[in-house]
Length: 252
Image (cartoon, rainbow, N blue to C red; front, side):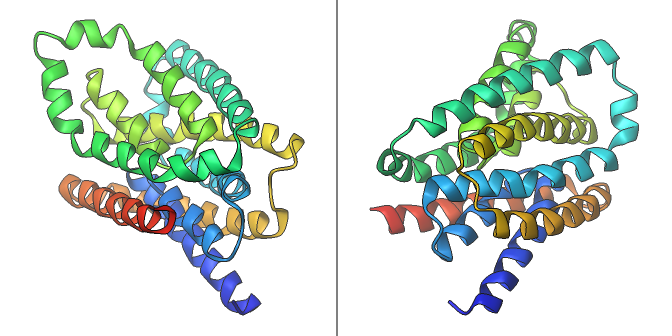
């Protein structure tokens, strides 16, 4: 691929990913395939993608600063700590995973995240009924598990976080988005540090994509308040299904 075309593709994918992450998650469905498309090996592409979208999460979290300020500080601190611990654990797990194994599991991870998000409203209604109180008590453990997943494979991280918060009873979409972006930033940041130490990041595309993902994240946070919930969910589900199908075709 022509170098200039490759740079344009990466920049566009990163900006769109920042917007998508701010709206409802799933931005790595764009950055990860773009990196693989230009020839970056899957594990390095995952690490590079994680670096690229990490600042975008910060931009998105800043866009939801009013929602975060309204939440108890003790809750935010507890969830930030859990996200950091899970992110480190997941990153270390990725660094010891054979490349062939990781490449084979990627489409299944993408599909799992997409299906879970698509079922989010039904799961939330189930949780809000007779099972709601019990599930709410598992909020911390659920967040830790999702953070491990996010440190291992950033694809679909935002989708899983949104599904988790809906499942444990959080009904305010903007608050869900705020928590999703904050915790995504924290666990991505610590996992990126581990990837950098492990030498898994391809730095030139990573730096370019980080700039555009940040711009997209800030723009997406503003857009998220204007889009209907059904449109937001539809964008994420379609993106996840398309990328899952492409990776199934590529791998199998």
